[in-house]
Image (cartoon, rainbow, N blue to C red; front, side, top):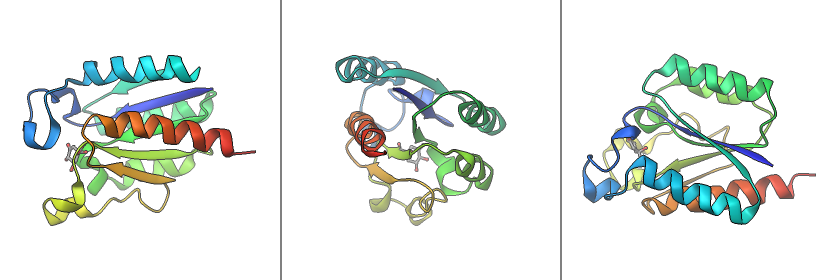
Length: 147
Ligand code: DQA
């Protein structure tokens, strides 16, 4: 089973961004924890981050053209307005799970909308770095439950 973890704009700055929303962990700390959980679950993990919207779209196209069983995505601010990323994700046949560190629904109103919500299996937000670990478990269960 192979799962792709996608991180979008500004998420390489975790550890330096507002700790009240994003905690102290860096993206690299989070990826280490994800890799350790993936090992326990017997899952192959690929982690990818970019600050360039078109590059994220191309990575999603590649996920379509290669063997990926599931995708987890924290697109950062793109979540709230990128129809380009939404359309790229909609091409995928595999389950997509949306992740956020912070509880986007308890923040500014522009964060309450996700343009991905109608095409993802579900959204996990508000648990800090544990959103990623819960997201990996959710993606894994979702793939296993698909006949
Ligand atoms: C975020 C929430 C987004 O609203 C914000 O733009 C981010 C991070 C999160 O993980 O909580 O960059 O996706």
